[in-house]
Length: 364
Ligand code: NAD
Ligand code: DAU
Image (tube, rainbow, N blue to C red; front, top):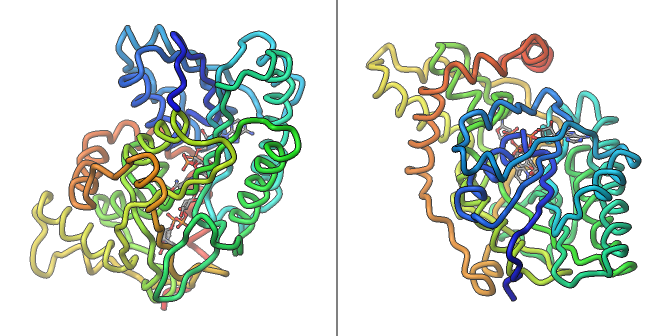
């Protein structure tokens, strides 16, 4: 059932991060009846300037509030004031390597933060008379399922088996969302998505890190043997899947989202080197492939992720629109055209992280 309301007031958490930014920008464009409140703490990963260039029409339907999903008093007064028709919850600590170096904040934000947001949503939903149309949509990850061998796919019934503090914290948050549905009837949905790539991704993650390092002729650090496999999805396809599930998904259901685009890490690095070399004009002995360095592996490094997206395709009619080639070209274009954005997010904290994560990895 599509929710029919004249105007929807939607709370998006973590909207200044990578996927949240793309989601809000896209949703404002394609849902003229939505007003979006973006609640974000602005950690190192959040950038409110991502919305500076919104059209006047979209600006009228967008507001930003800086705040912490772990702060119940703040959340309760926000929900009291705003009366939301739905919550789309992106806010999280999202980088696996950081969760290995400092897991505490992952438990605080991803578990406690999600729990506090559920509580505030429940209180306000009850006060509003338990409207059927309300949705709590939790954005989760395929990493909750653990690691695959060479065959098979993650389905919605694959048992949870997280490997990193990040994925364990996301798994715990998924369980809380399900518990609030089963115990208190809060109409919630969960989507578990594979690796995203695209504009506005913070350059600590694999694809933007490699693109920028190639552009700047820096070393390309490939963990382990480079044969780990991820299932890549262009971020706008993820955003469209979220809108589908938010509007048409059945409360209590989980939907897996994936790109059906499995690649070994090393093949992605080769591809990025070749695509960028073509544009920059580096040939022969000058090829960027010479920058590749195999370095110490990530502890607990999941070998393979691959999503079976049959359920969302059959039940809701969602399919990715971008191929890996069109998505990757759009991503490279964006990073080449947005050097100012890149420089603005690579703060002192970023440089410290890069030093911390890579200096101690031995070159193999
Ligand atoms: P990100 O790290 O780029 O952004 C996270 C955002 O959350 C930032 O803007 C940050 O400021 C905000 N935030 C962090 N702690 C907060 C707090 N306590 N209160 C309010 N805001 C806070 O992350 P992303 O890559 O955009 O991922 C968004 C969501 O999607 C996460 O829940 C992640 O687990 C999930 N996910 C990501 C991917 C991926 O490939 N990036 C794939 C599947 C699922
Ligand atoms: O699968 C969904 C998940 O994808 C999301 O839940 C996470 O928030 C998101 O960060 C991502 O997790 P990964 O660990 O898969 O992504 P990351 O970009 O960190 O790494 C992708 C692969 O590349 C992984 O196998 C590790 C490898 N890698 C990563 C970095 C940063 C390298 O070889 N070198 C690197 O420098």
